[in-house]
Amino acid sequence: MSRFICNAQVHACWFAAKFKERDKKKSKYEEGKHMGKKALILFLITLSLGVITGHSHGEEYPTKSIELYSAYTPGSSFDLTARVIAETASKYLGQPVVVVNKIGAGGSIAAADIISSKPDGYKFMLISNNFFAITVKTQKISFDPNYLIPIASLFVTKNALFVKGDSPWKTINDLLDYAKKNQGKLRWAHAGRGTILHFAPLLIFKKTGVEAIEVPYKGTPELVAAVLGGHIDAASGTYGALKENVKAGKVKCLVFYSDRRYSDPSDVPCTAELGFPEVGRFTTFGGLYIHKDTPPKIVKILSDALRKTYEDPGFKKGIENLGEEIRFEGPEFNKETIKKAEEIAVPLLKNLGIYVER
Image (cartoon, rainbow, N blue to C red; front, side, top):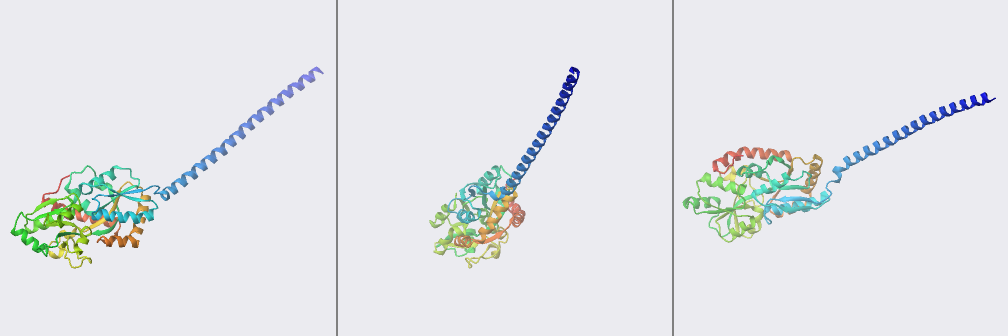
């Protein structure tokens, strides 16, 4: 009887051990199964968050105000135009576009700042195609201008040569005849060394054999005051900055640096028709430029907003009130325009002795 009880105890222990081992294996299996489900859920959550983040990144931009650099003095044509662009573009970007004056070196200070900043789309600048074709070719610069790419151009700036309203010179030929007979006496001014406003008169004077005194000013307001005050004989500036004075008869516009006449004012000739076709090849397209490493999605958002800005009636009225000509061109057009202008400008700059080797 005692042997039977002993054997029963042995079998009971054996079965107990087997059930315990089975339960242990089952527990590990259930635990593994649970961990697998947990890992799968975490993976799916992470994946979905990644998709959402990636999808919404472009939609979220911009999440704060955007800085639009104006490279010229307050009150200048480009500065006033920048403010019209900023006001209108803010509506289509959903965030304020704030104009920041980064003045100096014909735009190079503003350009250098953007190139050295994070390419996140929160800084871009208003500058012309001639900055790349002319201005940077006359300076020692510490940056590569190719790091700036065009988003779009929105207008054409009317650059011209002006004299005081009561000046004896009615035409550009009158002015040049006087200058030829009085070498070294004509005082002419501009507000940007290395810009088209500096470059164009130099070409005209060089071609006609005129020696004149160059008077540089820091900004357009000082230039306007100088011509109105009779401190200079002629001023190379933008029509937008002098439009009201022209209409009031206080200033006369002698010639536009263009390959065609403008509709406003239609009675002023262009350089191309007066025997200076090379000057007319540097039409100034006012455009928005940004760091080349800015994400394409952000560039697309800015491009779309600028297209809507251009189509906005308020923008059109604002630009026309400033005396400029509204015109939209995309990035490829602006790149090609810069390339063609460079090919023409470099030999001319070298001939004038103002080209700087890089």
